[in-house]
Image (cartoon, rainbow, N blue to C red; front, side):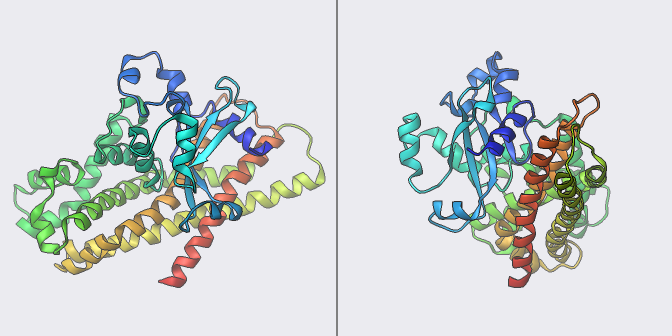
Length: 373
């Protein structure tokens, strides 16, 4: 690992999980003495259950590590010394060339081991947001302890209300604005958010004329779009404040002319890329909004059918965009909270570089997507 990667690893030790980082080491430190953590671990292999799982933007020299082209990989970092992350760590990228051999040699597990299945489930997510992480694991039959998901019951209720508001036009179109619409809206929202096979909403599937596999994958992505839409709405004020704070944060320590110039440039570029990525996410969400309007207010199910078929690709793009924004917001909230220690010049440069690199790649991806559309 590079010096900067080791420093970033050390910064993460105290940080809670974000949409980009699942900090199993901190979860172990905070909950390792609890019976629920011991009885329902995310991973059965102890080293994996104390690792850091990171959605990692692949550098150009890393792209050849995979058989198929991809921009984001799931990195599993095993600290050399859990009590001192400055010592660095070993890592493996899920799905890299020779991945199964590496896992067999390092951990003694083969492709059929439950931990390999869990890693595959995590790798198929565009971000490690706790809500979608929990939903994805449930789909795969994996239900670890609640301490792995930093999502409050209050947020669950807010999300449920948001979904009800979102699907109300569809219910109104179906049964009219009568007194039973409230109950029908709540029931349909429950079915959308459910992982129960009995809640597949067969009538909607038949209306959309979708095969079962395409429908189930599309509905999961629909759920993800609803969640990301709620997240973007919730984060708008906070991320704008972070973008402003980037322009004013001051490190402690001496600044030479070259470093000051780099930070000044970095502030402007980072603020611009944060706002641009939010705009890109809104454009991706607009694809869903248009398709859903076709179904719920215009009676055109074909538009929503096309959306569900294309949803996995769009979901991946949206998750990547919002995962970056969520990570920035949550890390900034943690690192610059009231009472936090002052940031050094070196650490601030690391933070800016971490944020800027990912956002720069996402801007390039968005431009390519627009050209391909």
